[in-house]
Length: 170
Image 1 (cartoon, rainbow, N blue to C red):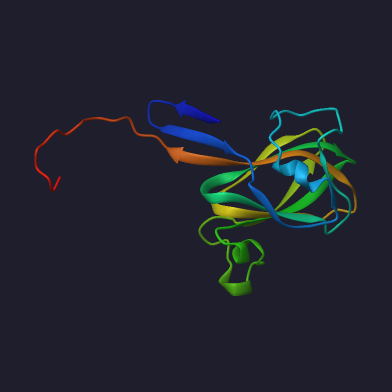
Image 2: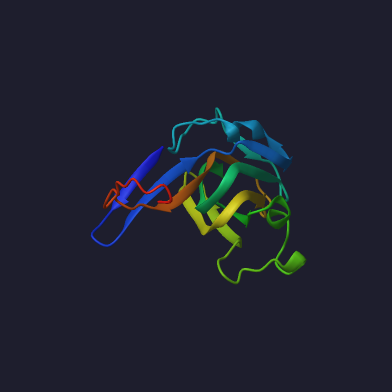
């Protein structure tokens, strides 16, 4: 799905993308549900949710192409708030690297962040270049997640002119 956001100074396309595969996962029940497209809304039903079972549970998602933007996480059940670590990477090794490892930094854009996620939430995190994302539960609690998808943010330009010529080089 692509949405076109426009105001007088800026025109942006926002594309919602599902992950194409799970590269790695640990301590997650129904991890494959993260690959299934579902309505992007908070739900009271536990059906079709993935459950991060314990501290250290993680998933590494591959979105199949380079993106510029962040991820949107929709949760169902959390006991209070849960802390997560989200690590974006243009390569799989970057998504698996902590700050300071293999020259990984947060210098130009935060790519390794800690966030707090409450139950029944719909939150977007990150604004960086990535293809892979690692999401790790840092809290000692179980968390049910309904959706994780990427939001690819692209500039949009109206076609201003068309050039017609017989010049082969052009």
